[in-house]
Image (cartoon, rainbow, N blue to C red):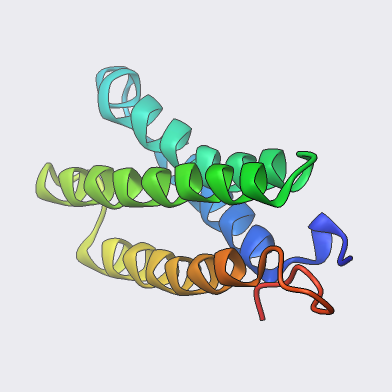
Length: 125
C-alpha cells in the first residue's frame, strides 16, 4: 500500500488548501469572516477527507470519505467563483485554482476507482 503522503491526489489537495489559505490571509476582516472561512474550510476538507478515509478499516469507508472529499471540492469551486465575482481574487487566480481543482477531481475519481481492486496499490496514478 502506498503511503498517504505519497498519494498524488492528496499532495495536490494539500497544495490547493495552502494556496487558498495564503490568499485569504490578505483579505479584510469582513471578507475573511464570511467567505474566507468557508473557502478555507472546504478546501482543507478535500485533503482531510482523503486522509480520514485512508485511515479507515474498510475500502467501503475509504470510498465514502473520498465522496465527501469530492463534495468539498465542488463546494470550494463555488466559493472561488463567489470570491472572483466579489473581486476578492483575480481572474487569473480563479482560473488557476479551478484548473488545479479540475485536476484533483480527475485524480480523485481515479483513486476512488482504484480503492479495493485486487493486486493493485491504492494510488491516484
